[in-house]
Image: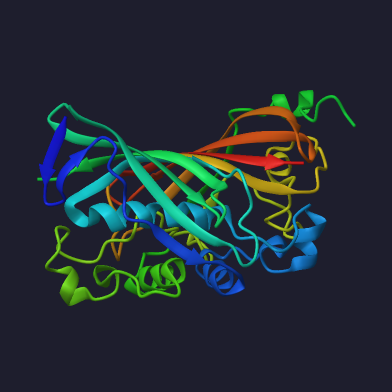
Length: 141
Length: 174
């Protein structure tokens, strides 16, 4: 099945445009500032090492926001996120290049709504997944 | 190494309300700063910070990105069990302390995962209320030892009683 919208034809197997950031304290401190998330493991390498990681590491909430930004970068206001979920599998440690990626897994109509299911994830520069997840987007007329 | 970190005392408080939070009214600056942080170092999409431009979009004005948190930097009102002010709000034992259960004293906590369904968008001026409950516990062996998974369910509504989101969040402690 294919949906034709302002996005063009949306079909199973389509890749979303990637969302890529080189990450570190500049990203995390800003995000701590807006999310009031001042936790030592996200600010201090020593605290990160005590928690079992090689350095301080970024917030799960920021991976969550990257996944939203990935979807928004694709759909814009031509659609809206109906549901989204992810796991936080691996830590986003200092200096990592984090890339949000997504793929269309289903295109379907349900109750008059045009829905697109996506596999979404963030990964590091070696392709290790950090936050694998899924989402359903409603395409708007 | 204990066989379980889930005590009878913890089981007895499953389903308990962890709290209600009501946000201050969302402002356009809250949204602008949020997207600047998330999109750093690139410029965030214009519709999040340029009110004139946002009028031309589907929403007819600025709306917050779905991932926006209206509860950062204090909330206007809280209800429900209260934490001793001496205790760090990020204390890994917070859930149990709030519900009067015996803490398990695990040292570290991580965000294990989230599932959210979205409803009404959040706009400048909106006041959001969140009600949080302890949904349950489970555990398994992980790389860093016995890992405790705690799931909380939270419903957000706006000032018109529209559901903004229902979220289920899992915290991993070890």
